[in-house]
Length: 198
Image 1 (cartoon, rainbow, N blue to C red):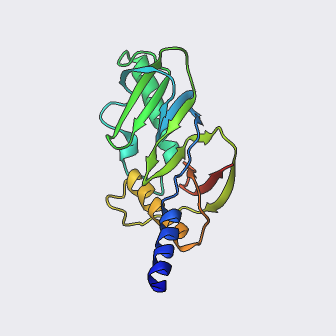
Image 2 (cartoon, rainbow, N blue to C red; image 1 turned 90 degrees about the horizontal axis):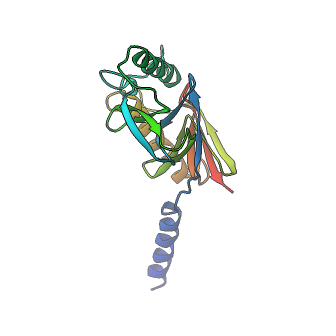
């Protein structure tokens, strides 16, 4: 009986650690070449889609290798969108939303003026801040170098993010890093900052 109670208590403690809700904060997104970019996030304010930011696909769906990084790709994508406006293929826009899952990038116009505020999205249950910073105060749990499988599925951007998150979650489970609420990714090298909100 005592053994059963001990096992039950251990199971409860494991479940409480792994089942902790990860908090998220409203984010302020960065401007890339003068345009707000929403990646792993959605605008808080109402907007309408005015067209594709790039023609023929989404730059973030491509391989992120040693010769280019996500920051470079974002700058190229915004430049492409500006060229489309100049050529009359796209109306003026206020921001760009990148939908990684659907490999689409959309130019949007806000209904009540440009806003940098965003709700962040989750991957594997973890809020992701990419080209964005949390508005709420937080403390740093750990800073980690880029760490993802070189054989991640298709070697695409989203595969590297998911591979990195898998490794971070394993480190949390094993106690190598403390419990965290969210991850801030560095777009230049995919290094990460694990944070916990105050």
